[in-house]
Image 1 (cartoon, rainbow over the protein chains, first blue to last red):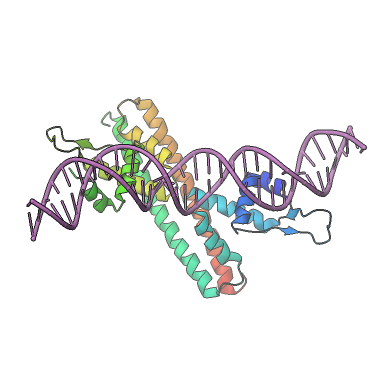
Image 2: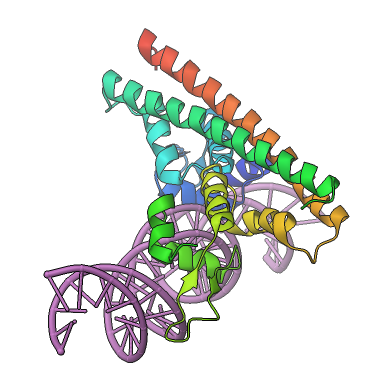
Length: 121
Length: 121
DNA sequence: TGCAAGTATGTAGTATACTGTATAGTTTAA
DNA sequence: TTAAACTATACAGTATACTACATACTTGCA
């Protein structure tokens, strides 16, 4: 169980950002009930995993709202099995289409490079 | 040569967004010098290509600033051959790393799906 | 014990990328 | 010829995702 600064060090995500993510409901830590002098929040390994997932999903263009959908499908007990699978299947399709787009962009840049090297562009 | 509404129809990008992109320097149309009664702007096929490129690059998480770098490498005569190639090579690396991240995210979602199907998650 | 460092809460500010509104002039088709 | 539709310009407003600041309390170490 880690405090927020350790979480930040492990993931490279600023403390402010972690708090922001927690406020938007992407995950939550826990206070220790036996400690009465403070309300420090502790985070387990699952939160680290979620943060790493968030980091990657963000780079490839998913919004926090989209990421929250997946994270909820992952952990929320309130959602039905069917609803969870539907969300995840939709995401998998989006991911495949993103991979395709990336390959198109890559090809276009390669063509552009070619033209520049040949002195056309 | 198209007017802005046709450009919007062909690409699916709202007129307001197209104007915004033009203002940020991603491309530019031309007014016809022989027409004196208005200052309507006309766009050629190159602009359509740029817009399609922008659309794809955005979905996969590139910012407009990053996209502008590539577009400038593509078309700006002011940049040296070397500078252009450097920008494009950097982007190609970013794209490859994005593809890798997408595959990791995909794998994680697949595992999650599996767990849900088995009734673990 | 005292003080730096860490933590929590709340609120305001910033950057990016639009999106809408107002105003005014132009074109086109009935 | 006039009304609907299109165009340009400017500026305000919104959504998302942070980022910074102020305040106050807590912990850990010299």
